[in-house]
Length: 395
Image (tube, rainbow, N blue to C red; front, side, top):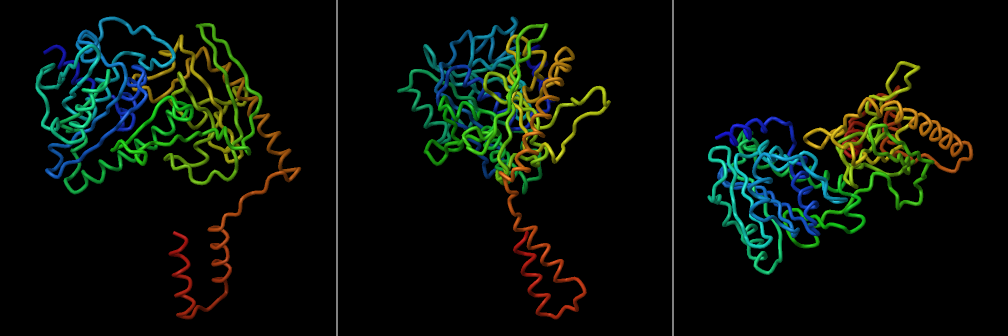
């Protein structure tokens, strides 16, 4: 009863679906998974038998690890296990999952196969959800017979996801799936680029494989690397700031933010992006102002790895936001002032040398032509037809 009481409190941590799935993928990476499969299935019975599943081929868990850590509130503080260990507080599986469902089933294999369900109503039981018979689930359970180890996480009773009106539930569900793909390709871009992991959504074939998105365009020969800086903190650890001037012609990056809002700092921890975009309330202290999104800096992106030793000072429970500690602000601000100055000097030099040409915005060009055509002109029906057709093409 005490466990389910606390679990109920975990339901309001504000995780989005993609952030919660990232918590599960973090656990897979921590357990040395090479392949991670994400399945999101919406059933036709108003979602009653819908489920979300994350599968990996990592090291799995034994009974003690499952019952005394993964499915309960840890009694001991987490001890960092190395470069791929993404656990910070030891609460990720519970807090992220119960933001969206009432039941988590864990099927894991290490020295033997173990199946347990943690539900808000009953706590830890041996009961299995109805979706255990779905072909996606059965396929991976069959694979476990020939697999040394691995883990399946199943969310069922998706009460927080199925709260939309019936007609909207299915479409919204698959919108969340698309958002999750985009989220993963950014936050795990280093793992994907270095071929450390493979990510698949709703299938095992190559077509389901997630490609990486590098926000710094490091493999693009038009990207310019500016001088970086290394910062040491009194509380321990150090950070290296690596600034990049990204190419002009990156197009629509489709990350849910405008080009302006994608400028600024990208915080990583152990090669995983935690938070990104903007200047995080920093600014020139003497000028008494914060840096906001500014078109002049929309090609400047700064990569910064959070110190592992003091990670809890920087990261929220949901591991999707960074709060810069007071003791680090002035040092980061000082480095950024120099980086922004170097950036402006380089941009101005390139413009003076005309080494770069601004890309032509064809849509804007056509709109200007239309405006010119409309000025001081009495329009015929034929003119109106041409304009209407042109506007449709510009949408």
